[in-house]
Each structure stands twice: as structure tokens, then as C-alpha cells.
Image (cartoon, rainbow, N blue to C red; front, side, top):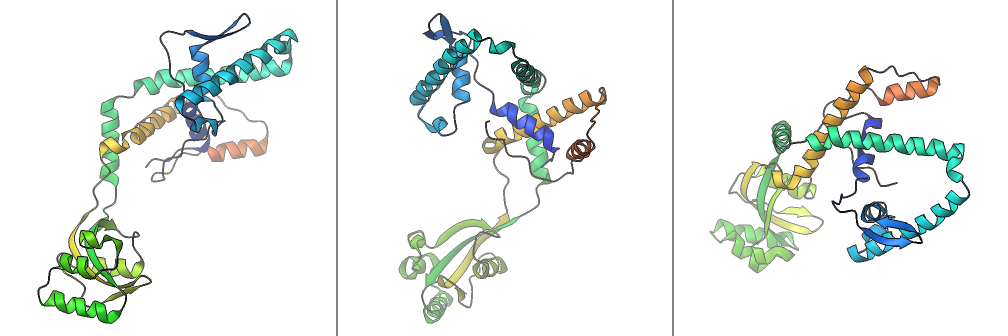
Length: 293
């Protein structure tokens, strides 16, 4: 997947984290004296709840958010009485918050609202085509405690006994009722001794010598081999949409930077900024969303 610079990722993830649902009707949900609390304010309060409260059921979450919104209105009224909004510190913070919200509004208009289903599907197809081939095997096994038991099972298989039936009868593994069926798995999913033996077998073959692991002795049969299928589009389209949005966001940033001269007076900060904003190297994993602040 495509990598990107550190600052762009942080800004992108922060925007995604702070979105709140929009309501066509901004109804009044509560009053604090002469001050009104609208549905839009309650939505923002819900979206910005402490992570612990965000785990509550929806009805309890709304109550917690409303309580927080009322507290905000009460103390904000006190701050206005004391004219705290006229201090230099407050004005600087409000300018920063205004810039951030304008950034978010511009992002929504030129990135979020422009993503189409065709773009998402095309990006999915591109990512699938770039995936390296990964072999999977579909195997069954019979697990027993001793090597002699495993050798006896191999003799019965050589004599024509059915593998699944022997698994149901002899195996000590919890999946014995499914005939020892382990389904498909790729490398790295099983203990090394078991994995090496399974991937060395041809389709339809079973191990001719017992395979020892910390669990006991295994007799393994490979039912099938295949290249691992890609994740279904329906399962990953939300992640793919994030990649499409990130590409659009980076393009938007690069366009803005090309027409603006950026000067950083502090040498250490300038070097750090230049390092963090180097052109991305292809092939790295996509970033994880930043937590809410």
C-alpha cells in the first residue's frame, strides 16, 4: 500500500476522527437559562466523548454527551461574563481552531465529497493486482500422544482406511468431529514442524512418517493447494476508500505547497519538517487512524 509523510497522515487522521453526523433539522434539545443546546451541538458532544464513555450504549452515550454540553454552556456563560474571550490567549486559540475547522471544511468539499464508487473499485483492483502470491494448503490432521500410535494410523491409511473417519475415531484434537479438518492456512499460521510437513506434501498425499510437535504426534493429509484469494471487496471497501481519500488529500496539499513559500526560521525545526515531508517510498503499510484528542 502507499505510504505518505508523517504530518499529512496526522492531519488526515485527525479530520476523520472529528467528523460528526449532520442533521437537516437542528432542533433544540435543551435550554440552559436563555441559552439553547441544538441537536448539532449534541452530535459534536457525542463525537468528542472521552473514549471510555464512547463505549456506552447509544442512549447512555447521549445522556453523557448532553450532560457535558450543559456543563460547557454553564461555564462558557461565566467566561463570557468575565470577558475571557477578549484575552490574547483566547484569541490565538480561536484562530487556530478556526483554521483547523476551515481545513476540515475544505478537505470535505475537495476530498471526501469527491470520492466515487468507481474510484474505490479501481483502487481495490490495483491493490489486489500488486499483492504477492501466497500459497495456502487445505489440510486435515490426526493428533495422537505417541509415535507408535501415529505409525499405526499411517499403516491403516496405507491399507485404504478413510482419513476423516480415522480422525474422528483416533484423534485427540478438538476438531476430531470434523474429521481433523483445519481448512485453508498460509505459512506462519501453524507451528514450524507442522507447517513444513504440510507444505511439503502434494495435493491428496498424507505424511508417511509421524510429525512431532509440542502437541504430540501428527499425521497430516493435504486436501488442496491454492494461491490465497484476495480479501473480498465488500469487506475492505472502507479501508480502500481511506486510501483514495488520502491520495486526494496529498494531491491537494502538494498543489497548495507548490504555490506557497514555506519558511521556517528555526534550523532544527526546518530540518525536522523537511525530513518528515520527504516524498513517500512505495510499498509501506497505510497509517492507522489517530485517536481522538
